[in-house]
Image (cartoon, rainbow, N blue to C red; front, side, top):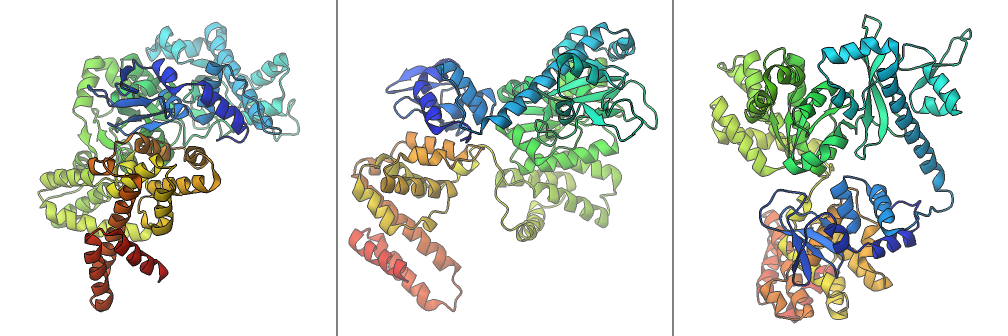
Length: 607
């Protein structure tokens, strides 16, 4: 929760914004008993699996795992961060966002930078439309067959061929030049003889405004109209408080809803490629901003999509970049396909020649990352000889090994086996060896962020005990059993462990456990979604027929049995006495007699 907004204000907004009313303004909710249901907006489905519980003020999709409170829904649906959701819901509730003392300075400063970028973008657009010297810029755009409508839609402009256009603009606006320098629009001159200490970063360039996910201009990319050995073809804004190029995707503000609907993003190399894709109807296209794709870019895409199509140039550099990007996106849990354009073509030129149908055909023929990599490597190396085959297989397995998903790895291994004519078992052996080496080298690296992956692999007994504790918060006997007989380190899943810890802390302090969790949730929303899943999960039939205390005792026994089984399987043969003891414990626990089980657990905890 942002420290600049007092907690009482956030709670007031949450109280005023009933989750059913808010979600009902976005979706067609249907009454279903004491809750509501709808088609999930976060994945494609034909049967409603998205549920809203007005009593608990949470939502949860049993199909894709998305879930949380009213803030989380707005964050996901509007593709904004928590402060953005807070602002939207505050406007809806008619609540003034009161800042804590000393917290408004940074926010006010960023607002000034946003305002400057917005006004400068409009200035560049006016220059393109009205200035005589912009004739060459207008001619360039016509030559590239960019219509007035698409130029207007993407806010394309022109930076005058002057050294002090920004200083003149700032003078008319009575704007501090230090702010323009911080925004990356001007630089300081190091020449003592200069008439002004400032000069423009962008001169005689086609200007492409760069926007964040909320559609705010945060930077610019300038394409030179006249290039020579001393003039860079593209100049981008530097890193600023608003702009971090490793996190920004060009046209994400226009593409994000289409990406959510398609569950797939098209990744291009350049801005005009993206613009041409949008013009042709492929509005789920985006590009990186003057840099190779990064882990942060993958996290952004992962919030909206399950898969990506990489659409890079067909030259050697483009092929290598596509393979590298494929591994990066696979590492973030995304399915990856690579579309191959004809030689010397890019999305812009291809669509102009072959139209939307031709481009759609190319997308339909996109190959998996492994198929593409094998084709590229086979063109460069002789895979018919042993050395070439080994080199190709090694490179492909390195790519496959970047995927954290066992199903995806198995599928790609099968594809590699068919195309390289190598038995799958041989590739699996080499892959396992490679993964072991990688895991040793990267010990301590956590799983990639995004989605509901953690929630899907929670051991069933840990999920069930979370369900019981969340519902038995007012049953001291059930809570006490867990506090006394089930140390937190017995929970293998970090989300389950965090939730149980919060519930126990809530009982001790008298606070609401959801309030405690709101202070610890990560930006990815995994914990938020897991809690929603727990609160809306039905009890298993046997558990529903007994008291919470008995159900929790049964689950504690199950978790200790699994602990003993794991320890016994890992013991060396020399530890025969401990192995016998564990076998004795397991046999006694099978009877599920709580008095015997409690004695065994207490003896183990005392060691």
